[in-house]
Length: 226
Image (cartoon, rainbow, N blue to C red; front, side, top):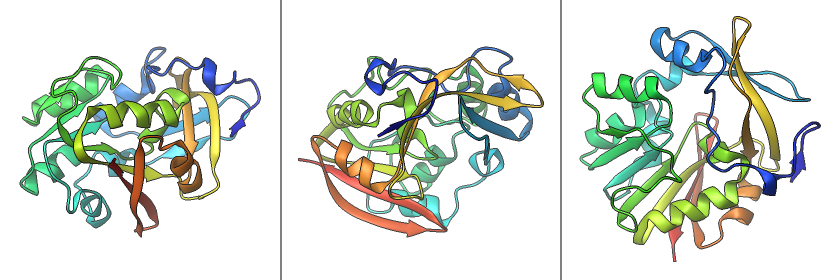
């Protein structure tokens, strides 16, 4: 694991840290109007975030992530609800959770089932979810993929699955404090991680890798509770 300059070690991170919250709330603004965002790690290089895709309709790569899953499905960090809709359209019971009030409001306006919660908060159906999704970089939540995957495993029913979207570089394993920035407006700092396939397999703990595939240059891993 690499810790970028200016960031404390991963074990000191607050696992409930919130992506893009606080400050000038650029993430909430982009949820409202679709404007561009960048993720800026301390001591690192800004990365453009694909907000338009997150806010759009699920594509073939997204649908590959839910193929063969069983419900109910929990979409962790659901954002504007694209994957909730995809799961519902596939005939699965599904619920999203997000810590961003604007994301929750957006989903509710679309009549999508959503809860204003962190994955680390008490949740309904503890130990009874059929599947958990960590899509669009959400393996980075809290800056500690091992803790996040262990929490997702605890949410699953026996034999349930976690589908995680990995960083495209299979060797990527970085933890940092970052901010989301738009038009010079910055969020409060938060802990985040970027993990490729190798790091996620190493962090899987009670989960066993069942399948890995690439769709539209995106890498997905499906883990099964054992």
